[in-house]
Image (cartoon, rainbow, N blue to C red; front, top):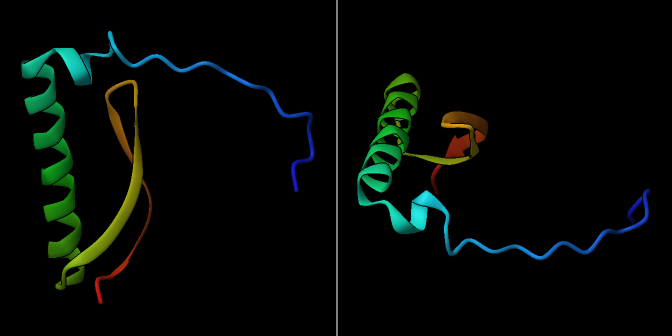
Length: 67
């Protein structure tokens, strides 16, 4: 149940570097893969990892063993 009035926003990713810049794509995906590997090493098992990337930083929201 939304507490605030909903706001409609038009999203356009056509100029986003994740779509248009191969070097950025490779860098970001490599960073995400390294974070995933570090988390799996820490817990010792494959993990289902959820997170977000904001301003080039990776934030892990939660992780749990992969079933």
